[in-house]
Image (cartoon, rainbow, N blue to C red):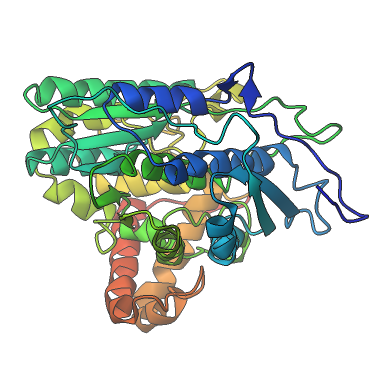
Length: 432
């Protein structure tokens, strides 16, 4: 593999003995056990995702970039059909650049000898796999509502998760077990993958904890699973419209704090990539025009949601409490926690590290007050000038794929902020 003079090559070993490592082999085995045989292009998705995930989590932004943020990353990925992948490298690169804020370059080569076929067919059966769709299942409140709504509509989803850290994994288990207990007659199931890499994967380089690229792994796993369906499939990505747009609350949220995981531009690039690769599936966010509170209110089984919502997990950093000797789980003051609290107002049984937002003046120089104050500023701005919403929704990224939705996107942004505004009414913030 030729490299430029200023490049450092870091090999990524995906094979341990005769088996695929880093969770890929296990995922393919689990799909086989579910009666699904992904296409080789679908299996390629997992190889590409492994390279992206390794680069994103094992290259420190602070040391491996010129501006302490934007890294320059080149990947060369072994795939089943380098020509087909190379023809779609442009759209893949645009998706990754947008998602992580880095400069990606992706090339492809033929898989090594002995690995031209990664997928062994599932055992023949007269009974086809029961699944009629795939849905991301993070253990969060939105994905829980998405699963409930699908099951109430008699759907039979395959719920797809990345196991993640302990608290995330536990939340996924509790939500899934609760769904299984409630829908005993349904054949829905789940596929869960764990992918991680040694901290010294890139010699002499520290790891990166912003994980802006993790949704590429989630989506890739869902697409790989869907490619094993007999025909077209839909991968549902349940996310409320306010988070999906993720308009920066202030100028400070243009970097590490502003994610683009389910932004319409990113999902559109995924659908463009699937078409180009010949994968008969598409990604959809069924809640793009709903606030989180509207999702809660319209849930098709409110009794079950009331039961399971407390075990779902929305916090952006659920383990940060360990460093401050506070309970791990929901901090209560990060952006996702505040949106969650607003959606469950007056019926929230979640335990928060900061249980009472009104109990004292929140210090805007500390984490407990920063996001609250940013939300207060954003809410006040839109209350005074609601027409700004039509402009601000374009700030996180392009929205040219569906121009007919602009008014609705501006509206869900206004409604989402108003929802959080009710929660924060009377909350006091000030710098120390």
